[in-house]
Length: 316
Image (cartoon, rainbow, N blue to C red):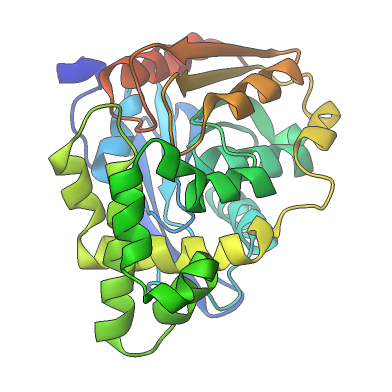
Protein backbone atom coordinates (compact mmCIF):
# COMPACT_ATOMS: atom_id res chain seq x y z
CA UNK A 1 0.00 0.00 0.00
CA UNK A 2 0.98 3.61 -0.50
CA UNK A 3 1.24 6.32 2.10
CA UNK A 4 -1.63 6.69 4.54
CA UNK A 5 -2.71 3.08 3.93
CA UNK A 6 -4.40 4.04 0.66
CA UNK A 7 -3.52 2.09 -2.45
CA UNK A 8 -1.33 3.67 -5.11
CA UNK A 9 -2.69 6.26 -7.49
CA UNK A 10 -4.36 4.70 -10.48
CA UNK A 11 -6.01 5.81 -13.70
CA UNK A 12 -9.31 4.39 -14.96
CA UNK A 13 -9.24 1.64 -17.55
CA UNK A 14 -12.54 2.91 -18.98
CA UNK A 15 -14.49 6.16 -18.86
CA UNK A 16 -17.70 7.41 -20.40
CA UNK A 17 -20.84 9.49 -20.17
CA UNK A 18 -24.32 8.10 -19.66
CA UNK A 19 -27.29 10.14 -20.81
CA UNK A 20 -30.26 10.03 -18.45
CA UNK A 21 -33.64 11.72 -18.23
CA UNK A 22 -33.84 15.45 -17.56
CA UNK A 23 -31.02 16.40 -19.92
CA UNK A 24 -28.26 15.13 -17.63
CA UNK A 25 -25.13 13.32 -18.78
CA UNK A 26 -23.32 11.38 -16.06
CA UNK A 27 -19.56 10.92 -16.02
CA UNK A 28 -18.48 7.42 -14.99
CA UNK A 29 -15.23 5.49 -14.82
CA UNK A 30 -14.03 2.00 -14.01
CA UNK A 31 -10.83 1.27 -12.09
CA UNK A 32 -8.93 -1.86 -11.16
CA UNK A 33 -9.61 -5.39 -12.36
CA UNK A 34 -12.20 -5.70 -15.17
CA UNK A 35 -12.89 -9.25 -13.99
CA UNK A 36 -12.89 -8.33 -10.32
CA UNK A 37 -15.64 -8.10 -7.76
CA UNK A 38 -17.81 -5.03 -8.50
CA UNK A 39 -17.95 -2.07 -6.12
CA UNK A 40 -19.67 1.30 -6.49
CA UNK A 41 -18.29 4.49 -4.97
CA UNK A 42 -20.96 7.04 -3.97
CA UNK A 43 -19.66 10.55 -3.35
CA UNK A 44 -20.99 12.98 -0.80
CA UNK A 45 -22.60 16.39 -0.87
CA UNK A 46 -25.05 16.10 -2.53
CA UNK A 47 -23.09 17.68 -5.33
CA UNK A 48 -19.49 17.23 -4.16
CA UNK A 49 -18.38 14.96 -6.99
CA UNK A 50 -15.73 12.24 -6.91
CA UNK A 51 -11.97 12.66 -7.18
CA UNK A 52 -8.91 10.61 -8.02
CA UNK A 53 -8.18 9.91 -4.35
CA UNK A 54 -11.46 8.01 -3.99
CA UNK A 55 -10.15 5.30 -6.31
CA UNK A 56 -7.48 4.46 -3.76
CA UNK A 57 -9.66 2.84 -1.09
CA UNK A 58 -9.79 -0.34 -3.21
CA UNK A 59 -7.19 -2.98 -4.09
CA UNK A 60 -7.05 -2.60 -7.89
CA UNK A 61 -5.99 -6.20 -8.33
CA UNK A 62 -9.19 -7.47 -6.74
CA UNK A 63 -11.97 -4.93 -7.27
CA UNK A 64 -13.77 -3.65 -10.33
CA UNK A 65 -14.59 -0.18 -9.02
CA UNK A 66 -17.22 2.05 -10.58
CA UNK A 67 -17.03 5.75 -9.75
CA UNK A 68 -19.52 8.26 -11.09
CA UNK A 69 -20.45 11.90 -10.58
CA UNK A 70 -24.09 12.37 -9.63
CA UNK A 71 -26.35 14.79 -11.49
CA UNK A 72 -24.83 18.26 -11.66
CA UNK A 73 -21.69 17.22 -9.77
CA UNK A 74 -18.04 16.95 -10.73
CA UNK A 75 -17.57 16.10 -14.39
CA UNK A 76 -21.25 15.38 -15.07
CA UNK A 77 -23.13 17.78 -17.31
CA UNK A 78 -24.60 20.34 -17.02
CA UNK A 79 -22.51 21.28 -14.02
CA UNK A 80 -24.41 22.57 -11.00
CA UNK A 81 -27.81 21.80 -12.56
CA UNK A 82 -30.70 21.17 -10.16
CA UNK A 83 -33.22 20.54 -12.93
CA UNK A 84 -34.67 17.06 -12.40
CA UNK A 85 -32.14 16.56 -9.63
CA UNK A 86 -33.83 14.48 -6.92
CA UNK A 87 -33.02 11.40 -4.87
CA UNK A 88 -35.43 9.16 -6.83
CA UNK A 89 -33.74 10.34 -10.04
CA UNK A 90 -30.30 9.48 -8.63
CA UNK A 91 -31.53 6.01 -7.68
CA UNK A 92 -32.77 5.49 -11.24
CA UNK A 93 -29.37 6.69 -12.48
CA UNK A 94 -27.54 4.11 -10.40
CA UNK A 95 -29.72 1.33 -11.80
CA UNK A 96 -29.23 2.63 -15.34
CA UNK A 97 -25.46 2.65 -14.80
CA UNK A 98 -25.51 -0.87 -13.35
CA UNK A 99 -27.42 -2.17 -16.37
CA UNK A 100 -25.20 -0.22 -18.77
CA UNK A 101 -22.09 -1.85 -17.31
CA UNK A 102 -23.64 -5.32 -17.04
CA UNK A 103 -23.16 -5.69 -13.28
CA UNK A 104 -25.35 -8.08 -11.29
CA UNK A 105 -24.49 -7.06 -7.71
CA UNK A 106 -22.00 -4.71 -6.17
CA UNK A 107 -20.56 -3.55 -2.89
CA UNK A 108 -21.66 -0.01 -2.02
CA UNK A 109 -19.12 2.41 -0.56
CA UNK A 110 -20.39 5.82 0.50
CA UNK A 111 -19.73 8.55 3.02
CA UNK A 112 -21.84 11.43 4.29
CA UNK A 113 -24.53 11.98 1.61
CA UNK A 114 -23.04 8.91 -0.07
CA UNK A 115 -24.14 6.89 2.95
CA UNK A 116 -27.66 8.31 2.60
CA UNK A 117 -27.85 7.50 -1.08
CA UNK A 118 -26.38 4.05 -0.50
CA UNK A 119 -29.02 3.26 2.11
CA UNK A 120 -31.79 4.50 -0.18
CA UNK A 121 -30.52 2.38 -3.06
CA UNK A 122 -30.04 -0.73 -0.93
CA UNK A 123 -33.51 -0.41 0.58
CA UNK A 124 -34.98 -0.16 -2.92
CA UNK A 125 -32.77 -2.81 -4.56
CA UNK A 126 -31.45 -5.14 -1.83
CA UNK A 127 -30.97 -7.94 -4.34
CA UNK A 128 -28.39 -5.80 -6.16
CA UNK A 129 -26.19 -5.19 -3.11
CA UNK A 130 -23.59 -7.63 -1.79
CA UNK A 131 -22.32 -5.56 1.16
CA UNK A 132 -21.93 -1.94 2.29
CA UNK A 133 -19.15 0.24 3.66
CA UNK A 134 -20.47 3.53 5.06
CA UNK A 135 -18.72 6.50 6.63
CA UNK A 136 -19.92 9.66 8.39
CA UNK A 137 -23.53 8.54 8.46
CA UNK A 138 -26.16 11.07 7.41
CA UNK A 139 -29.81 10.03 7.65
CA UNK A 140 -31.20 13.29 6.28
CA UNK A 141 -33.52 13.98 9.21
CA UNK A 142 -34.71 17.50 10.07
CA UNK A 143 -32.57 17.60 13.21
CA UNK A 144 -29.46 16.78 11.16
CA UNK A 145 -30.17 19.60 8.72
CA UNK A 146 -30.81 21.99 11.60
CA UNK A 147 -27.50 20.98 13.15
CA UNK A 148 -25.61 21.80 9.96
CA UNK A 149 -27.31 25.14 9.47
CA UNK A 150 -27.40 26.28 13.11
CA UNK A 151 -26.10 23.77 15.67
CA UNK A 152 -22.53 23.84 14.40
CA UNK A 153 -22.26 27.31 15.93
CA UNK A 154 -21.87 25.57 19.29
CA UNK A 155 -18.54 24.06 18.22
CA UNK A 156 -17.42 26.31 15.35
CA UNK A 157 -18.80 29.73 16.33
CA UNK A 158 -16.23 31.53 14.19
CA UNK A 159 -16.96 29.47 11.07
CA UNK A 160 -20.69 29.80 11.60
CA UNK A 161 -20.39 33.55 12.14
CA UNK A 162 -18.63 33.85 8.79
CA UNK A 163 -21.26 31.61 7.15
CA UNK A 164 -24.18 33.63 8.51
CA UNK A 165 -22.31 36.93 8.25
CA UNK A 166 -22.00 36.58 4.51
CA UNK A 167 -25.72 37.43 4.37
CA UNK A 168 -27.34 40.77 5.22
CA UNK A 169 -28.49 40.79 8.83
CA UNK A 170 -32.13 41.06 7.72
CA UNK A 171 -31.88 37.66 5.94
CA UNK A 172 -30.15 35.63 8.63
CA UNK A 173 -33.43 34.35 10.04
CA UNK A 174 -33.64 31.99 7.02
CA UNK A 175 -30.09 30.96 6.21
CA UNK A 176 -31.10 28.19 3.82
CA UNK A 177 -33.60 30.28 1.88
CA UNK A 178 -31.25 33.25 1.60
CA UNK A 179 -28.38 31.10 0.39
CA UNK A 180 -30.54 29.15 -2.05
CA UNK A 181 -31.80 32.34 -3.68
CA UNK A 182 -28.20 33.44 -4.28
CA UNK A 183 -26.94 30.02 -5.31
CA UNK A 184 -29.61 29.79 -8.00
CA UNK A 185 -29.11 33.36 -9.23
CA UNK A 186 -28.00 33.29 -12.89
CA UNK A 187 -25.29 35.90 -12.28
CA UNK A 188 -21.94 34.14 -11.67
CA UNK A 189 -20.74 36.97 -9.44
CA UNK A 190 -23.68 36.22 -7.15
CA UNK A 191 -23.80 32.42 -7.16
CA UNK A 192 -20.04 31.84 -7.07
CA UNK A 193 -19.51 34.13 -4.10
CA UNK A 194 -22.34 32.45 -2.20
CA UNK A 195 -21.08 28.99 -3.10
CA UNK A 196 -17.59 29.81 -1.77
CA UNK A 197 -19.03 31.02 1.55
CA UNK A 198 -21.16 27.87 1.91
CA UNK A 199 -18.39 25.47 0.91
CA UNK A 200 -15.69 27.09 3.07
CA UNK A 201 -18.04 26.74 6.05
CA UNK A 202 -18.47 23.04 5.39
CA UNK A 203 -14.78 22.46 4.70
CA UNK A 204 -13.70 24.28 7.86
CA UNK A 205 -15.91 22.05 10.02
CA UNK A 206 -15.02 18.76 8.31
CA UNK A 207 -11.81 17.79 10.09
CA UNK A 208 -10.85 17.33 13.71
CA UNK A 209 -7.87 19.68 13.40
CA UNK A 210 -7.61 22.73 11.11
CA UNK A 211 -6.65 21.54 7.63
CA UNK A 212 -6.00 24.46 5.24
CA UNK A 213 -5.54 22.14 2.24
CA UNK A 214 -8.99 20.66 2.76
CA UNK A 215 -10.59 24.09 3.05
CA UNK A 216 -8.77 25.21 -0.11
CA UNK A 217 -10.20 22.21 -1.95
CA UNK A 218 -13.69 23.16 -0.86
CA UNK A 219 -13.19 26.76 -2.02
CA UNK A 220 -12.34 26.14 -5.70
CA UNK A 221 -15.00 27.72 -7.90
CA UNK A 222 -15.93 24.61 -9.87
CA UNK A 223 -16.08 22.45 -6.74
CA UNK A 224 -18.04 24.99 -4.72
CA UNK A 225 -20.87 25.57 -7.17
CA UNK A 226 -21.87 21.92 -7.52
CA UNK A 227 -21.61 21.29 -3.80
CA UNK A 228 -23.33 24.40 -2.47
CA UNK A 229 -26.11 24.80 -5.03
CA UNK A 230 -27.11 21.13 -5.13
CA UNK A 231 -26.73 20.68 -1.38
CA UNK A 232 -28.95 23.70 -0.64
CA UNK A 233 -31.49 22.47 -3.20
CA UNK A 234 -31.64 19.05 -1.54
CA UNK A 235 -31.79 20.53 1.95
CA UNK A 236 -34.69 22.78 0.95
CA UNK A 237 -36.55 19.69 -0.28
CA UNK A 238 -35.80 17.52 2.79
CA UNK A 239 -33.37 15.48 0.69
CA UNK A 240 -36.29 14.04 -1.30
CA UNK A 241 -36.39 11.20 1.22
CA UNK A 242 -39.39 9.04 2.15
CA UNK A 243 -41.54 10.60 4.84
CA UNK A 244 -41.09 7.70 7.24
CA UNK A 245 -37.30 8.05 7.06
CA UNK A 246 -34.52 5.56 6.44
CA UNK A 247 -34.48 3.90 9.86
CA UNK A 248 -38.10 2.81 9.40
CA UNK A 249 -37.06 0.79 6.35
CA UNK A 250 -34.07 -1.04 7.77
CA UNK A 251 -35.95 -4.36 7.74
CA UNK A 252 -35.41 -4.38 3.97
CA UNK A 253 -31.63 -4.67 4.34
CA UNK A 254 -31.30 -6.28 7.78
CA UNK A 255 -29.56 -9.27 6.16
CA UNK A 256 -26.93 -7.26 4.29
CA UNK A 257 -23.46 -7.16 5.87
CA UNK A 258 -22.09 -3.70 6.51
CA UNK A 259 -19.17 -1.87 8.05
CA UNK A 260 -19.86 1.62 9.43
CA UNK A 261 -16.88 3.89 10.09
CA UNK A 262 -17.54 7.03 12.11
CA UNK A 263 -15.33 9.77 13.48
CA UNK A 264 -16.03 10.38 17.16
CA UNK A 265 -15.78 14.13 16.63
CA UNK A 266 -17.58 14.31 13.30
CA UNK A 267 -19.25 17.71 13.45
CA UNK A 268 -20.87 17.59 10.01
CA UNK A 269 -22.65 14.30 10.69
CA UNK A 270 -22.52 13.67 14.45
CA UNK A 271 -21.97 10.10 15.64
CA UNK A 272 -25.47 9.67 17.09
CA UNK A 273 -26.86 8.89 13.64
CA UNK A 274 -24.26 6.19 13.00
CA UNK A 275 -24.99 4.66 16.40
CA UNK A 276 -28.73 4.63 15.74
CA UNK A 277 -28.20 3.10 12.31
CA UNK A 278 -26.01 0.32 13.69
CA UNK A 279 -28.55 -0.34 16.45
CA UNK A 280 -31.22 -0.89 13.80
CA UNK A 281 -29.02 -3.10 11.60
CA UNK A 282 -28.25 -6.60 12.95
CA UNK A 283 -25.70 -7.37 10.23
CA UNK A 284 -23.72 -4.14 10.59
CA UNK A 285 -20.63 -3.40 12.66
CA UNK A 286 -19.86 0.11 13.85
CA UNK A 287 -16.27 1.30 14.30
CA UNK A 288 -15.81 4.64 16.07
CA UNK A 289 -12.52 6.37 15.26
CA UNK A 290 -11.52 8.20 18.46
CA UNK A 291 -9.34 10.90 16.91
CA UNK A 292 -11.22 11.94 13.77
CA UNK A 293 -13.89 14.24 12.44
CA UNK A 294 -15.87 13.92 9.23
CA UNK A 295 -13.33 13.67 6.42
CA UNK A 296 -12.70 10.30 4.80
CA UNK A 297 -9.03 11.27 4.48
CA UNK A 298 -8.24 11.65 8.17
CA UNK A 299 -5.72 8.95 8.98
CA UNK A 300 -7.79 6.78 11.30
CA UNK A 301 -10.83 6.89 9.06
CA UNK A 302 -9.02 6.08 5.84
CA UNK A 303 -7.24 3.12 7.45
CA UNK A 304 -10.53 1.80 8.79
CA UNK A 305 -12.24 2.23 5.43
CA UNK A 306 -9.50 0.33 3.59
CA UNK A 307 -9.70 -2.43 6.21
CA UNK A 308 -13.48 -2.55 5.87
CA UNK A 309 -13.30 -3.01 2.11
CA UNK A 310 -10.57 -5.63 2.48
CA UNK A 311 -12.80 -7.50 4.92
CA UNK A 312 -15.34 -8.05 2.17
CA UNK A 313 -12.95 -9.10 -0.59
CA UNK A 314 -13.77 -12.83 -0.28
CA UNK A 315 -17.51 -12.48 0.41
CA UNK A 316 -20.00 -13.24 -2.33
